[in-house]
Each structure stands twice: as C-alpha cells, then as structure tokens.
Length: 546
Image 1 (cartoon, rainbow, N blue to C red):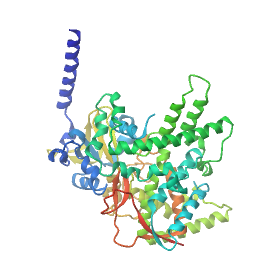
Image 2: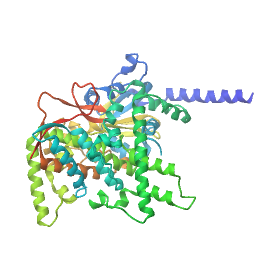
Image 3: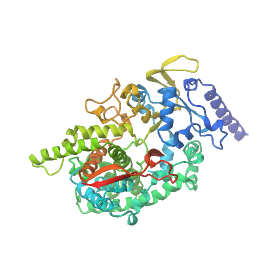
C-alpha cells in the first residue's frame, strides 16, 4: 500500500510539473524564427534546426541567413522540438556573459557531451619550434610548391603548447607517423563532427534527461563523435601520464627543469600552471586530507590539459591549451588564407616586421618582445580582422539558471507584431549566442562587415557599438565575461610569432587551379576544399621561399 501511494504521488508530481511547464507562458514562443525542419521532414530524430546549424555546406550559412531574415533575436527549435533563443544582439550578449554571467551557466547537455568526449575530472623559446617548422616547409616548398598548411600549423601549435604548459616536447614537428598525439589529433574535429548524424547531435541532450548511471554505458556506443574522442582520450591520458611523471620527478629532486615558453615570454608560470602543478603537489603530499591517488592525478591533469578543444572553456588551464592548439591553429590557417589573397597586406606586414626588428636590434634585443608585437599596428589590425571574420567557435550555448529578463540593443517583433526591447526568459530555457553573427553585424562593423578589411582596425576598435563586449576590440570571438577565454593573450602572441616567421621566410599565394576554400562545419570553423566529400580540413596554399 505504501509503495502504491508513493508511486501515485511521484507520478502526480511529474504530471503536474509537466503541465505547469507546458502552459507556462514563454515569450520565446512568440518570437519569429525558422520552421522546425526536422518535424516538417518527419525525421527519425527531432533535432529541430540543429540540422541546418550543424550540417550546412558552410558553418556560416544558417547563422547569417537567419540573422538577415529574423534579426538579432529570434526563436529556433532544438532537440525534441524544444524552443530556444538565438541571439546576436550586443546588449543581450553582454548581459548574458558579463552582467548576469553566473545566472546563465552551460546546459547540462553541454557538460555531459564534454565529459563523454574528453573524460572527467612565446617569442625566443618559440624560435626552436618555428625553426623546425621552417626546415620542414623549406623542403616541402623548395621551388614554389603548393603546401597544405593544416598539418604544419596544427603540429607547430601542439608543440608550442606542450612547451608552454609543462616544459614538455610533444615532438609533433618531428613527424606525425611516429607521434601518437599528433596522430590522434590529425583531423580530429572533422572526423568527429563533420556531417554528424541525428543521433550524434541529439545524444548530449538525451543523456541530460536520463539517470546519470546510464551515461557511462552509452559512452561505449559506436557513434561517430563518441568513438573518435574515445580513442583520443585513451592516447591523451597516456601522454598526460608521461607529463605528470616528468613533473613529479622534477619536484621530487627539487628541480624546476628548463624554462617554459611563457617564462621566456616574460609571463610568470605560477599564473598559468597553477592547477596541474598543484595536482602534482597534492599527489606528493603526505597529508591524507590533501593527498590524491595516482588515477585522480592523471584524470585531473588530463582534464585540465586536454578538455579544452570545444567552445568557451571555463577553467584557466584547459582554456590556455585551447588557445595554444586547436583554435590557434585554425585562426592561423585563416589568416594565412586571407594573406595569400591579399599580397598588399603581406608587403605592409613585411615592411613593419623589418622596421620593428631594426628598432629591437638598436636597443640590443635579438628577439622581438611582447611590446614590439603590440606596437605593430598593421599586424594587430590583421589579427583582429581575422578573428572578427573567422570566429573559430561560431556559437556558445547557455541556459537560464533562474527567471530573468534579457535587454536588447535592437527591438524585435513578436508574432503579433508588437515590438519589444527586452525578452523575459524562464528558468531552464536555453540560449544560443551567435558570436559569428555578432561579428558580422553591419550596424556595428559597417556595410562592409562581410569583407576581410584590416583597415577598420588601424584607427580605434573598428566598431560603431556603444556596448563594450569581448576581451579585445569589441570582438566576441574569445567570448566575454566570467567565462571568457583566459588564454586569449597567449593565443594572440603565439599566432603573431608564427605568422612573423612565416612571412619573413615565405611568400603566400593561392594554389593554382580553381580551388575554392569554404568555412567547413567541423565542430570549429575549419578550412575545407569546396566539393570535397572526404570531410578533411585542408588549406592548399602556394609557398615561395624568400
């Protein structure tokens, strides 16, 4: 009898809660937006508009087409037809990420997805690594040959972040065939995310709706994304163990090892390495209250070192690694692509580099400093414009932690034609923030917002916005607020240092033939050859040694 009453009570509770949620007024429902294409097409899995968002020929298509048609705040459909708010409005983004950042956490579906994929839990130093890159590319581009920049830049940034994060040489530039980490990173995102199936897209949301003890079972499913990252995690864990073992031995013997890259850049290690080294210290502690086991050390180090490849990381170290590898490599690919199409900007940059090196030599410096980088206005303009035009992570997802009201810079119409200047949002409703669409708003960046034009940043921050947003130049590329990318500064330094080396040694030009590069959708904005069906990240460019 007791269990019948308990069952009836629990069932009644959930039925009432479902009815309340169903009839609870949602302003998002009254906003315009694209139709639920999954429902209209009677697909097996109702993933709403995520099909267009993720599987469009170019990752920019849905973001820009929808924003042009519906404005800066509108409704789209998510998994199982759940209505979501899609925004690129500057005041709304500032409110969600800055003003009320703690009230808009990442949804559980996102956090579960990250866990399934990746587990629980620069100037003078760069010289040696870039010299390796130069030697390899000199051979590949001996007489003005077409070179795919993707593997070179990816392996370079991987080695740099290894040196910067843990005084560790991943040896990725020594040859991908003999390097297990470079192998597992090769085309990782495209393999995992390119043309994802409906079940792959829906899986994180499904997992967020079932008891947690089923999660580990479902991670063994032979699904595209899960399988690729399961293999990645196995290799990453092994490499992380090597790094932890090395650092443990150094601390046991009272040594600090060679200086890491950030130290040579003039940045204190303690601000960037605190978490992983604190984990190593905890493992060495004799205090049972602070000592952690070997497996926990490994899991934590792996988590901090590697769980960073997706959008908007929220811890210092994994953001630092993200800035140093996947997103940085991709940004370098896009700046190389644009410079190959704009020889006049290559010329301006080389002249600026020569002039700055001369000034450094006069004061007795053999290498450029961070201050030198900051003083190079054309270099800064090129980097900022590339970050604006090519946000590697095009959107981020947030969920209202409580009932709230999101202010807007630009009023939007409801279904009945009423204009509203703020959007009430209920606890639990999700918001997609389109960093890509914001970075292309003509009301902020001008009528030429769709063009790559570094001139806009030569004087001021290049915007007409009254809202301060982002971590640099009013760009949303590195997110903003409490969960903004803490590694953005390192990422910029790394990109600038590598770009300078490339431009001093090579002339970049488009590959011959009618090769069109598109912004492929591979979890990140990845360069791909139009018409190619193999889903590989590619950027063929002609390199002519200088």
